[in-house]
Amino acid sequence: MSIQTAIEKHLKPLDGEIMSIDMMAQVVVSRRPESKVPGKPDERYMVHNFSTNPEMYGQLFWGHYDLTPAQAMESLIEKIQKETKTGRQDTGENYLPLGDDLVIFKPAEFYATPDTMQDMTNYLTKFSGGESIAAYTCAYMMYNWCAKMSNPETREVI
Image (spheres, helix red, strand yellow):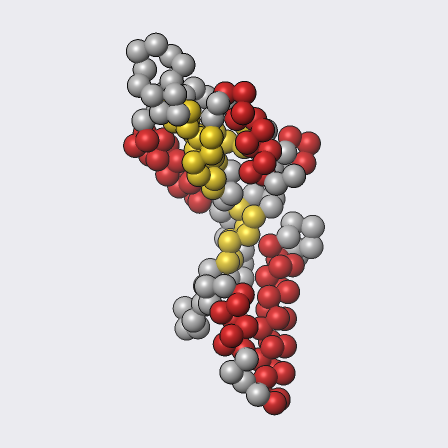
């Protein structure tokens, strides 16, 4: 089950729907299209924290559907900024681990960044012969290293 499916399951009894999910801060913004509280306008929003811990996967920490869209976005930005400040700088490496299961890599500014894997593949196909072999080898070695470092089970903190 995906985190989105788990969260949707928790929101269903409240008639809530997901508006935005931020995996870094483990925050979801949801809305209820029709207010169930007399005197409150329709379409109220809530900002939840959620868990990616396997025992509590997708579990939401509850609040109340009493926020306007602007208040919900302000709360979301606050939570993201708070989470960003908790990052620990790793010595000599070019990424920041956040928590136990998230690694953010800083881009190497000198090189272009493809938007998709297909864009990267399209670029690599421009090479031929030995250059093609070297380009694919280096690109996918780096891809595998990023996959290893972004996985908490295989990451090595240097």
